[in-house]
Length: 164
Image (tube, rainbow, N blue to C red; front, side, top):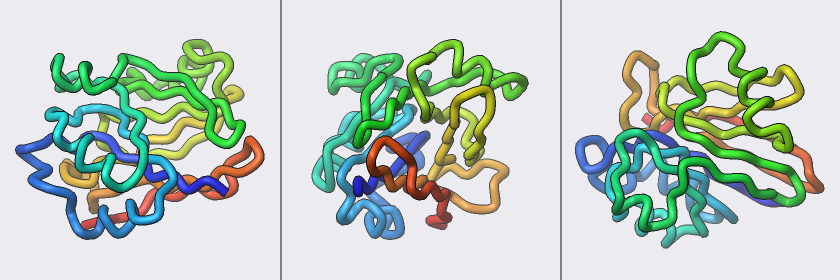
């Protein structure tokens, strides 16, 4: 089984001044880390990579230095046989699952960020997953990260957990 930690919107250094202990607890033992953008500085990615390999997409607050680290605008790959896509901004809430299915027709899971609102929703032939933000909760009750367990091309477990 593949254990994946999903992050977005860390907004360093304003919000992330180093990996928060509650986040680090989830990162230990991860097989892969996904970051759905708004890293803001590539040192966060270096810090995360000390725990596990990192896949990242570029957010609207990420500059050329994050892009140079290896953050494209979108990314498509497989997790233990599961087709996955990543994008930072999935657009407005209305018809989001249909829009993401059209944008990434081969993906069973689309990971995104931008809104800072945790979400795990299935519809229109795709599951969409936003981990929220561990450091900039905005109007949410807690900072959050996402946890995925993937095996044999399927999501065995998906959770969004508080870290603040």
